[in-house]
Length: 81
Image (cartoon, rainbow, N blue to C red; front, side, top):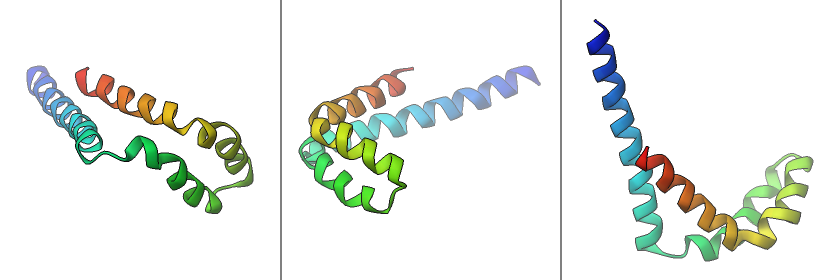
């Protein structure tokens, strides 16, 4: 019973890792993710709560390139676990 559960968890971990890895590959191959992140966030934050919009506009959008690379690095880190 325990080995079946562990095998099932392993399958789930492999699938989640593959999805994150595929997300990184897609972002790198298509390009434009890092450069377009700021503009995309400015559009999406219009419908967000005020506290979040304020944070996003003052911290994330001005440093969108850095956050773009951090997102890619984080997804790659999760995929490798």
